[in-house]
Image (cartoon, rainbow, N blue to C red; front, side, top):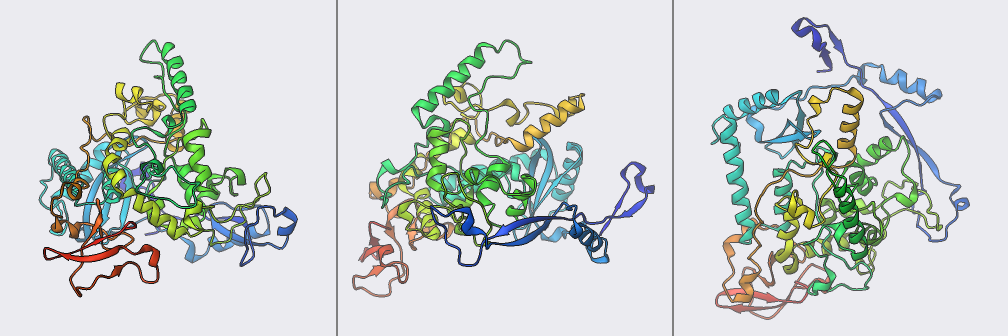
Length: 522
């Protein structure tokens, strides 16, 4: 650990100690207890403090010499080796890196993922073969023979099983989308291929929101660029214009969108208030945060930009919108500047119906994701992102085509002889988005669990172990009108979160040996 060998000399190469590269970013902090004001001027912020954030770049000041001398000490050597016991390996997945199938992601028994990019595909396949042939009993690959074809069959069968569980209500919408992202090569360990989730709500203006009203939801059958009629027509005209000049296969094919719905910059723009994403965002922007007007500061404004107002913005969401309220708060007190209209950028501005509470916003957003309406229509969005409408004629008809360099297999980087052109292609792939791998050539099946309650069929209580608890608690995903509890009393009662009467599930009653609850917020 902390050493590396010169590659070109093989086993006889010189062994050198690797010094950890360090850098320092300086950012301004707001005083403790700072509250954002719409009309606050820059002069009122003169008492702000300053703090340094260490990362990967030295500054040409006296501090530079101090940092450099510290980084040369015995305690600042970088460990480039990571040891993982074979007995701890629980799962391994093929992954893409720069749109090439040369990477693997290994998960241990504690669900810690390690993303490894190899020089070429034969190397990654050799390691995959070794891991399959030595899989321990606690691995989900223990029954897979150590061959590539057997691995492919296993993953196909696993995807089919997970899809079936979701269709029959044994898995939440959130979990199913996470599985699809994983099957399609998306990973938390690669910002360029971060898991992608849909905008599910379209109402960010109302004082209250009724999740039983279909009008508050986004049309999941259309990509973001097709939601606003006027903007969609402009995208359609762009595609038709490019198509008229597309004569041979060597020319770039026509596209609707010059940007993408997911890229590293979008992920960091959502998460820059949290470490380590704040450091990564600083590194991306050359040591400072982006301009205040371009930072993610208002959920409603971001929705309007991505769905209607901005021709360069068709971004979707990330999983954190459905489980991590902390990313909406500037708890690190970063000074994010003041917009041109005089408003300071601090905590993310939430919809009125969130009552200024990030946890309430995330809870309602998660409820919307698991709602009956989304459960009935989520497969249409999956077809656009992971399915048969991702590429080809169906994608063109659905206004769902992007720059060809975002697609898997669109270009062979290794065959590009010109180094300048090759670097340009890699930069495009790394910075401007990558489309997930295509999972299905046929339409995804619609979820049917929501039909059970309306059809009068009994609830499948065997599905409960597969479901994660939602808020309010005790609700069955796909069956928002029914609640299951162990019988403790026969009197009518209210059930909900402690201290939150407005989140009560409703009246409880005993019916045919089962305790059933009915409530409008359930």
